[in-house]
Length: 197
Length: 437
Image (cartoon, rainbow over all chains, first blue to last red; front, side):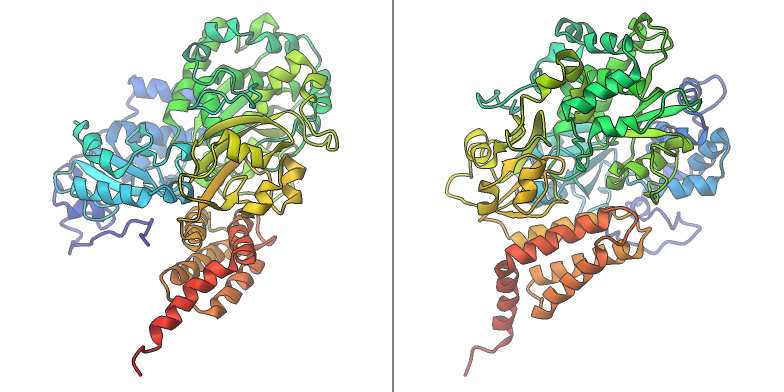
């Protein structure tokens, strides 16, 4: 039985060489962009700032815009870093610790960088009885990610199992970043991967 | 219709009549099909009159609990000086269920119209549609439809020129099954962790932003415009003569080991046997049905005999040892290891537990560990008693019903398919006894 929680391969890392909390990233050896300074998303006058301001008009409290604001950060930066959480906290007048508490509750916010193509394969019971585990194996094999949650050495792919994507009649559904692919079989995997830039 | 299949002659397509029709997703296309007529009618009625029509229709919540919609709306008191909120629960994440997804993909305006009518009926100026984060296409479609509605004046400060304010917004979730629980949904909407709240206070008293709130499922709200257009008596034509408690049509999502998985809409009281073998095409070639879960993974598992004797409505499924739930029909056939699938269901709940209550946090995790041990051939007979004991401690003792939902497949599975568990345990014993004399 496969683990649905990613089991990360943990190489020896020190505080100097990398972030202890981003093992998936640290393990593929490419730490360069991790050291890049965080570029704020909600700078005054930016399109994203305007978007957030519009979202804020929808709710009676600022805090209610937390999930939408985190989505914006993830779209722009690919993941939600500690700096990203601080920026969101300042924009919404809440504490960074509170924001982190919320980020860690939801599975869709990436707390470390992931591959360019983040592949989620549904393996919950309805898909499981239709052979979803073989689809996972095919993805792990063809992407070169040798473990779930692991990013491939070229930084291109991360493959995880996900709990119910809500498309059970189209087993096995997968998500690649924001896109759904339905009725995936192990045979279709190479073709799907070939179609990704 | 049995989307992606052509509608079956025995289906009654009300909510699903435009599934697969791209033009119906646009505002003009929807108006051509009679859209927003019901909202215009509603805005000319008093909120109390709308609530009464919905009450008369017998419409009940389609998300799982089956609470009468009109009664739920009547708990709200429009004009009490407080802001009210309507939340549409589109966090469809019950394994086996994918009907709301199709409603939002093909008929986003049906949902928006239902939301607008519901908002006005309960005295709310704002409705939030909470859509699960994975539903990127439904989110895009509903947001595009909302944009057209605002541009057209159908929604906003002066909805359809009525002088009334109706705002509808999409709120995107971020991957948490538990946010489909209504109080967790409200917490998530407020920008909190999705932990369910203790009731009381009930949402109608103190809901989202501590204001009176009503939460309805997508399918429930999408049915409301049809009821206002055609009347309560029209909606009640679909029910069993001997059971007036379940009315209207219901969408079922069918998945697992079956010939034609997909969405099917049938009237309340439809025979489940005919549904499975005729509409859905029966088992895969050379296989037989082994177990059936008719209402999403949280409801008790049925044997094939129970399923074949069921009538498809709230009471009909209860009479056969299970529940209508969300209408997500999961079929498991004789080629599957049933215990493995029950273990997989438990793992799902262990993953999705918010970990607030001890019984759930520990219970789901230990249930999963024990079941997986049995599947791996390491189980003992005592494990089965332990599972039942844990299940007992997990039922009716927590803030929300996620814990109970995890215990359900285990208890019903052990009751109805004990031989499957025992066979796996016996295997181990054979393994331990040396074969040489």
